[in-house]
Length: 70
Image 1 (cartoon, rainbow, N blue to C red):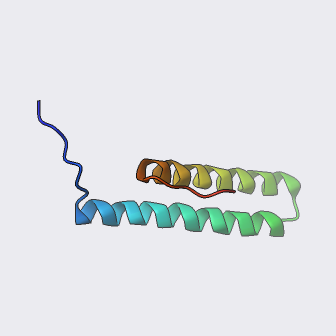
Image 2: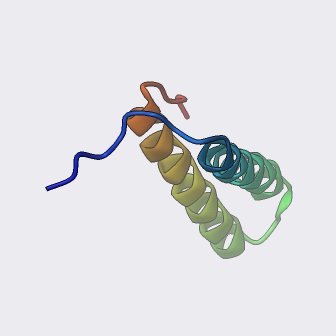
């Protein structure tokens, strides 16, 4: 059986960076708008979106050895 390399290619690293940026940006935007929205039900849904993206970001960072706090 072949052993998987411990080296991340440049293309893989660029994709991981994109995923981190997407999730960080979406969490940040959702956090901002959750405070701007007057309807509490919609604001709660937007907070759930934020939590989803923070979770994705932290999952990626835990694989890489880090994370962010909410």
